[in-house]
Length: 136
Image (tube, rainbow, N blue to C red):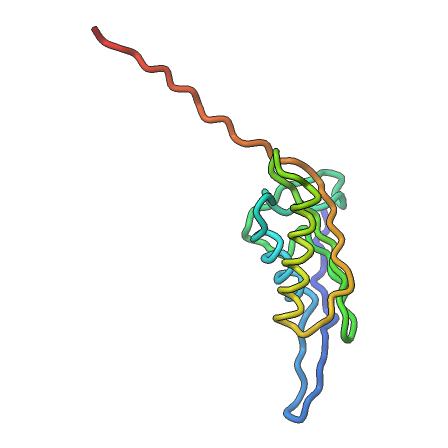
């Protein structure tokens, strides 16, 4: 399996003191963190690139996120797994709003779109049934 190269393109902003560079991966991490904060999202998905949808833990926040950053705008694709029983349109809308606000607040970029791709549903883990034995 081939390792994906890190994004080398950076957002550059010049001011009187110099320039500010924000890497695409930074925008991806912001988006991933903001998405996982939304109630109803069980985790991020690795997408379908490898042919297998894989649940990813909360350690690598840029996984399950694809960003395209221009000079002043950004577009984001989120690949999520939702918890069973949630209303998916509500969760997706909350993720869109949270990601947009986080990126715009932290980077100053204008987010033109946040596309949410629901890759799966996580079912609650069943609690092991422990039978009580009574001693008479």
